[in-house]
Structure formats: structure tokens, C-alpha cells
Image (cartoon, rainbow, N blue to C red; front, top):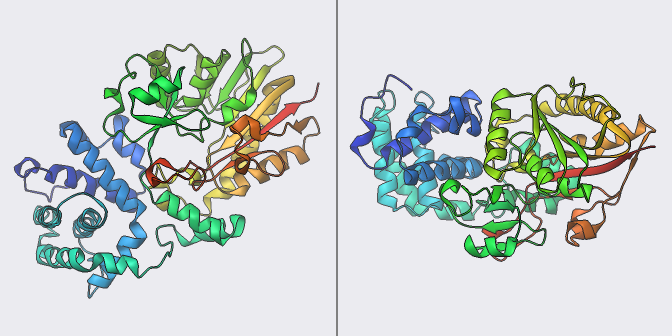
Length: 450
């Protein structure tokens, strides 16, 4: 943390949460650090331990709201600032974003949002000279901010232009705008349950989606919810839960889950009765996977290894291979809004090459007649449709096993013309926008020749 800050965080209730939010925003926008790295594990912000559960939840929501609305916030603030954002004091920029986000989208009294942002800049030596500016701009934001948003008339400023252009080219302008709107909504909590989804939907004040996922608007620490300690469910977006179901009956079958951490799909495979081997190259992520499986009481063999180099266990191969490949993650922006601002278009080609290497390895691990399900949480065709087309073009021993709409609750809009699964953030609409939407996923099912 910067040595220039001199006001103790404990002096004013809520200031510590906003100071940490500013640090994490700076980490994403200026140091290219992911939210996950800053919120969890050994690399998490050291100040998080001192926050109450309530302040931690507020801080997370504040950061996520700013990243989801960053383009709109930039537009509003640029209209309220005569000379643009201060460039010599990052904390002043953060304070303006934090204050404006609370005024425009969060249930925080305007006076509290203004006051705490002013205190935030006052506690930073470089930014303190901007305290008057921050106070004046945020007071104007409270009066004039909403009309400035209204004048945008549906423009998608909260998606980087390169990404919006790609989605427009791939899905058409209307769908691209619908995706952009969907990822601007704060998502619900999606849970995969071991059994009796109806009972858990009742206990958790949620509803069952057509695909079987339990969706709830409950907030706070998931560890405090009923059923967590008993291992009755795990957190998993409804779209992420679909690929593992494409194997059908897995009872007694051997399955390798490549790139498996943090383990949601591994848990599905285990719960379906498979003998599972879960591989991931990250030791810390495999440790987390093991912790999750232990809580759930689900057995699996695990290994820390690069999936592209892993030689398997010998024998004739596995009955099934699940490859959830590393990707640009552009389908997950609604849950991970930092992705929009951390990824670049130039990343996609390198990721596509890595996906091809992993696909080639996956084929070698599969026994004759076995099934491969390939998936990515990307909306980019190079990482989905094009990847499978390239594999099939160079490997006559693999064929498609088309997905039928009946396998995804009859939701035919999720199935492509060539029988692959393609979910979009704007799918599964709901009258309450918070209960609608899915992550963007692609999945294809292939069978190896006998």
C-alpha cells in the first residue's frame, strides 16, 4: 500500500472499504491485475482481512459496478469536468469513480457518497489538493448525472470498442447490443446442487432454471448459506453447468477433466458417478479444487500438470475427456467485469493456438469410441466454432455428435446449426433482469472412431 496515505482507515465507517476498492481498481486499470488475484488467496489485498462481511460485500459490489459501467462513468465525468480527470493523482480518479458509481447505481445516500470520496482524496498526499474538485463534481453528478446517462440512448459505452465490433461482426448489431446490456446487470448467484433442486430452491429463496440450476438473489458470503458446510451444492454459472451434462450417463466410466480447477465441472462429473481424474497446471488452483471436492464429499484423482504435456495413466485411454480450455473469457464479463478491461484483441490468436494443442492432446487421451466435450467461456469464434472446425479438418478419426435441444431443457436457441452449444449473456431473459442471463459458453461434442 502507498506510503503517502496518512489518515487511519478506521476513523470513518465505510472509508476502509472505499480505500481498498480504490486500491483494487488501480490494480485492474493500471497494473493489469485480475480481480480474483486481488480478492482471494495469497495475493489478495492485505486489508481485506480487517473488513467486516458487510464492508467486504460493499467493496466487491462497488468495484464490480465501476468496472461494469466504466464507459458510462467516463462519459458522465467528462461532461462534469472542465479539464478532464486529474492525471497526476490516481486516487482522485478513483474517488470520482467510486462516488459517481454510488450516486448513480447504488443504494447509498448521495451525501455519504460525496463525503466519503472527499475523505478518500484528503487521505492521500498527492490527491488531497483535489478535494474541492471531487466535492463539486460529485454534487453536480447527483443533480445532473442521470440526464447525462439518458442522453446516451442505448449506446454501448461499457464494452471496449474492439470487443463490441467483434460481437457485431459475429452475432449482428442487435444481438451485440443485447449482450452489452446483459453484461451490465449485476448477476444472480447460480448453484449446482447434488440432488433435490426444488427443496434447495425453496431453502435458498431462489428458483429452478429450466436447465436445473438453482438461481437466487441472496447476497453475502456463500459460506454462510444453508447447505454449504454440508456440501450439498457448489457455485457454478448456469451456462458453465451445461458442457459436463453432454456426456449423458457416466456411471462407472473413466473421465479426465483437463484444466479442471476450480472444480465445478469436476464435481458434476463425480456426482454423475464417473471415475474422474482432474488435471490443472496451477498448484494453488489444484489445492482449491481439492478443498472444494473435500467439502462436497466427492472423490477424484487429481494431478498438477500441464494438460498439453500430461501423458495419462496408460492403458487404452479414457471413456470421456472434458476440455474446458483456457480462453479470453469474454463470455464471463457479467461475473468478471475486469475481463473487459484486461484482455486485448491480440490475446485471442495465442489462446487459439494453445487451444489447438490441448485439443490434439485430448484426442490422444481418448479411447476408441470415447467422447470428447470441448468448451470455452469465450464469445469469440476463433476459440469455439473455428477451433472445432480446425480439429475436424485435420483429424479424420473424430466426428461430431450433435447436441439436441432436448439435452438443454428444450432451449433450441442454445444449439447452433451444426449441433454445438452456444450460450449468450442475453439468453434466458427474465422479467427481473437480475434473474436473467447466462455466461457466454461454447461447447462441442465429438466422438473418436472405433
